[in-house]
Length: 305
Figure 1 (tube, rainbow, N blue to C red):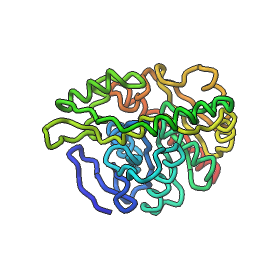
Figure 2 (cartoon, rainbow, N blue to C red; figure 1 turned 90 degrees about the vertical axis):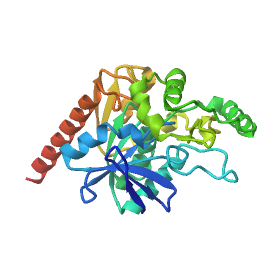
Figure 3 (tube, rainbow, N blue to C red; figure 1 turned 45 degrees about the horizontal axis):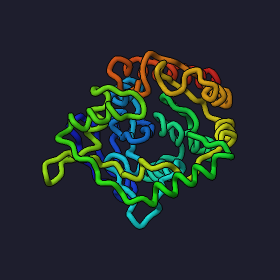
Figure 4 (cartoon, rainbow, N blue to C red; figure 1 turned 60 degrees about the horizontal axis):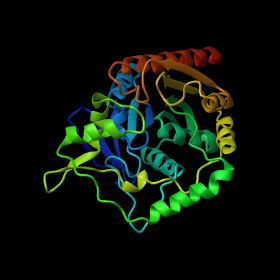
């Protein structure tokens, strides 16, 4: 496990033989939580929340870069052309093995929340608790749309790879993320993500580290009934923190997903999809998590006594 210390006081290191990159906050001897970011993001997604939680709760938070994101390795050209949601479960399990974690608490945003739900349902003995940030369950495709989804995926993956975009500098890349993001994000929130996800090329231009295959549609997805079955199988406590301008809200599908989870505590804060990285919201997110952990500790102590 090769380690260095980055300028923002987080410890940067690699796992799984250098395949996975990570950032950590807190003492290596403290109880370890794994933090899982969203699609096209990276470990810097937790750069404002993790230090607050580490110092207040006395935990160590290890934030991964999923494969193809941030500083983690991409798939080789000869490997599978599709990166499926469940593939990221192996990234988490590989990290747990490297960190010698038999069971883990997962702090996860968006796509990372979906991955967390898959793990907690399939391997409940490995997950102690879920703390989900504006994400629950997985994207789904109705059974009757499966042929069309497969068609879109096959055709997209057969097309020649496009030339990666070149930006004049970091701020230009940040502006592109703000203008073209799937969910609204401001420049201040996007900057830590883009700083970790970019590098300067030999020509002096700014380029993104993202594996371009992440932009292509999945070949297959779970059906809505499968997603609900997975959520129903979760047995650990789930803390769900949503932004009032996030992706869940009171949409019928989100309500069905929340009802499927047996032990779920929901909090809605003023904020967007990246509320844990927004400067005006991150303290509130931290407060909710700290309060939840204190209540959980009290309940456990009461049960023991």
